[in-house]
Length: 233
Image 1: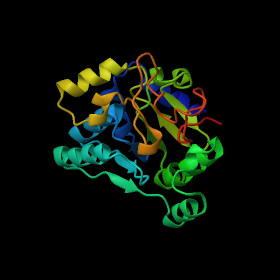
Image 2: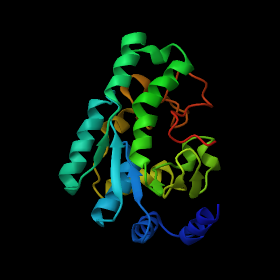
Image 3: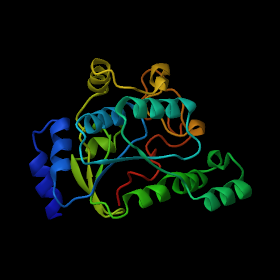
């Protein structure tokens, strides 16, 4: 897509902070950033809030998050004094799912897990992205084999917008070092071996030698661990 290539060229050789500033300065785009309050998202939120960039920050509250996630959410609000818009799943859909299949149906099959992810994450995300033109994420290439193939800018066919990954080439150590030096609030679960943090029933600490997303849906095929937010057509 021509626009994707144009933006990709504009962002070439820019730092993450410069990328965000550039996106904030685009005159006709509606730019948003989705945060789940992990290491990477906290770093990007710091850039946005510290510079008061014209980028809306939102989060998806699935109703199954860790208490530690809510704590860092609150710490972020206290530190930066800027709003984070929250999207919840539709009450009727959650009620129907749990009433018919119980609260732990996602352990029973991949189909059930994807159904839960769709109701709690994918559908709310579609509402959050409706009418927007650029979606910023905290994805890093080294997080998984699939993500290692991504480029800094790409067309999201599902949501019909451009996705930007400012931290794509950052290592985990790069992220952790920056957070430490700048006193950025972070999820305390990271100190307990959790690298990728999602819903509490579906996330565990990783073991030595495992990749960063091994703790997500650990009972499933290790090569297919996406919830549907970042799948490519």
